[in-house]
Image (cartoon, rainbow, N blue to C red; front, side, top):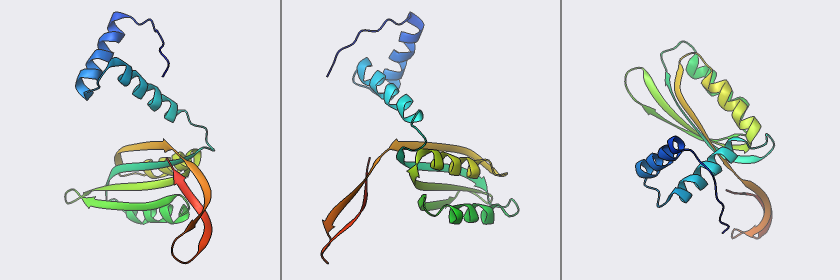
Length: 150
């Protein structure tokens, strides 16, 4: 591991120390490494493969919203791995989707879902991944297929 030196003003250093304390980082260095990783992930190229989670709360009573969401996932079945729903109250439903594909396409899908009327409180988390075609024996002989490595 390489060591670097940075110059930082007192106010920003206080924010770093507060982050270290709140999140329980072992050191300032670990906090800064985590911040750099997060910033780098946000700046991924649109073609770079990723695994992502999209979570959002929506009002299922909004006319036609559930059908529009289902149609959106159907139209992007190549990106949607799975979804899970949880009823929060009489109107609010939490949905969590696992997505996989080029980061630009995943972001566009997430935007098309979260911009729907009735969708609120959303977050997208992308993790860069590598797609590899490998040969594996799954009991019926060797065959090639894609595997994702995050």
